[in-house]
Length: 84
Image (cartoon, rainbow, N blue to C red; front, side, top):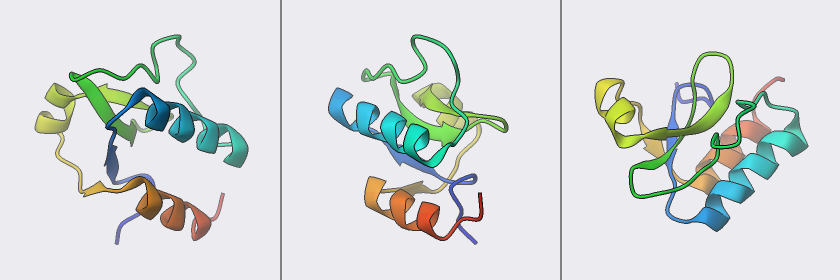
C-alpha cells in the first residue's frame, strides 16, 4: 500500500520544491532542518521521507533505495488519507 512514507515525488522545479516544503509545514510533517533540505537541482530532485523527516534527496539515493515515484497531486491525496 502506498503511503507518504514509502513513496517519492520527482521534483521538476524550484517552485515545486517550495510547494512541497510548504505542504509539510502546513500539515505539521517533520522536515530536515537544513538550509539545503529543499534545494532543487538536476542532481537533487527526489522528495521523500528518510525515516524521520522529509527532504529532497539525490538521484543516487533514489537508485540505491528505489521507491515508487508518484506525482505531487498523488502525494497530496495520500496525505489527506494519512493519520498524523
